[in-house]
Picture 1 (cartoon, one colour):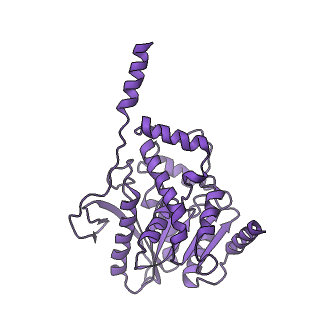
Picture 2 (cartoon, rainbow, N blue to C red; picture 1 turned 90 degrees about the vertical axis):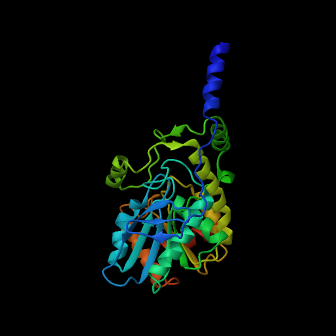
Picture 3 (tube, rainbow, N blue to C red; picture 1 turned 60 degrees about the horizontal axis):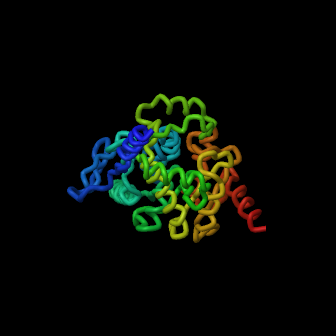
Amino acid sequence: MRRGLAVILLVLVSGCAAQLYPRGPISMEPAIEQDHWRAADGVRLPLRSWLPSGRPKAVILALHGMNDYSNAFDAPGRALAAQGVATYAYDQRGFGGGPHPGFWSSAAAMADDLCVAAALLRERHPEAPLYVLGESMGGAVALVAAAAQPPPAVSGLILSAPAVWGRSTMGFFQHTALWLAYRVAPGWTLSGGGLKIQPSDNMEMLRALSRDPLVIKATRVDAIHGMVDLMDAAQLASADVELPTLLLYGEKDEIIPPAPTWAAIRRLPHLGDGQRVALYADGWHMLLRDLQARVVVDDIVAWIEAPKAPLPSGADLRAEARLAAEIQ
């Protein structure tokens, strides 16, 4: 019995050190190269782009979600390019073809990468307004960056189902289980299999993700812990975002619950005056890749062209009704 307990303790202790890869020391001038850009610490981050045939009327810098990578914006990027909007997306640290895939970097490093990449794109396209589009985790990174050090090159934020599900709105058992797992075995991986959570109604796209070797299928506990830290920061950061913002959310989202999402929305300092919300009745978490993704893309383009005009889909009116119902 004692020997068995000793073996268990040895196994647990052997996995007790979290393995993180924060930003390294500054060693070079950041620059965009052919198929990637290099950060100041020399890290190479794969870069994709979808460009219109002529001069773009706007430029979008897109940030992917957890366990995903820049290819997430292939379909929306092509749709935006068809309407004259250029889109750039890069693999964030720890994801896709970026450094140390599967391992967490830090919220600070990811936010700093965003600011640097935005400045580089402003130099490349000085004549067009630049927007940051963040999906899920990418939306959380955008919130943290915009609140802490608003990139001067950025004209506005587009947040698609931003990851704002922090500890304050998690259940006791979820919070406690993560705390314990992080301290006991941060290197354990969890696949999420059996949870029966549906991120989109686009089944063909989901099957393609399951076959894509660059999409992470099992997540380390220390990466989940880092993600929750980021969501904590994003939830609070929404109160300090001054940039014009369009926040997109689907009523069928099974990944980021409505309670923390609407809490973050209510914290926006200029809600209704430069900061707007679109609520899609048939929208899931992957709004930009759902079967109705074209509706969302058209709303994004319309907002870029006329930030205060009604959205073509009417999703802004649905969001206004939802917020008004809460007040009554």
